[in-house]
Length: 248
Image (tube, rainbow, N blue to C red; front, side, top):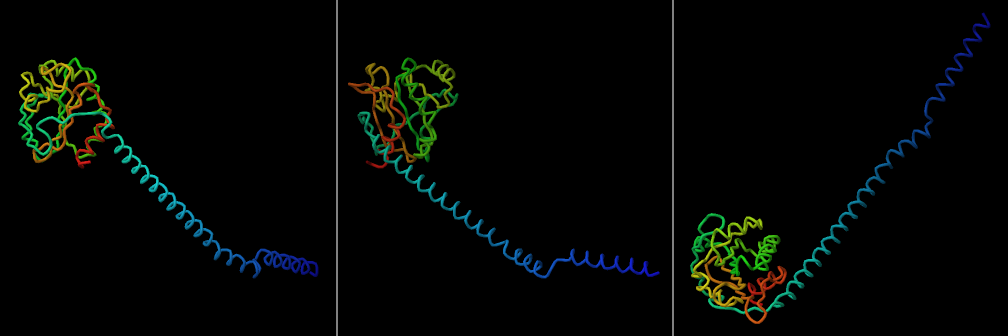
């Protein structure tokens, strides 16, 4: 009986000791509570630090964007006037003559129907003037830059037959409408046939900007003597238009 009692007592002591070991000490419980209390602080610091870094990056990017925009504007200003042009008649601040011509898009283009929109007219030599078509291709490729100047529509005008122009437009993949002026009636009304190397039988290289009210806002006849410029780089063309619209 005494052995059983001793066995039972020892077993009880062992179990009690194990429970004591398994139970966390008061000091440990306090340290764990403190650890839980302190853990959000580093997280908050990380979040705040990350937000500061992000805001700093946004500020730097905005500053760089502003500097880039200023540099672009300065470059555009410097590019204006690098290609000499004349200003024929009718010139700025005069009413644009009527235009009703067949277009390669299968419609009849009527300038009067474009009231309320800004239209860029491009008079050019025609089918055999590859630099003229290169010019139009460059404009089409950078059309968004012209839209940034609030230009809504562009049409090109030449004296070639409509069927030949439709084939050319199809072959080149142009979406800009080309108007056929076979008897030069419109070209003569704008005196656009006075600035080409082919005499008065064809147009030269003339751009005319017609405003929403139907008046001419800007004009440049690049194709005149002595250089007969037939292809103006788009940045220079945009700079000239911008300078003309602002009166600079």
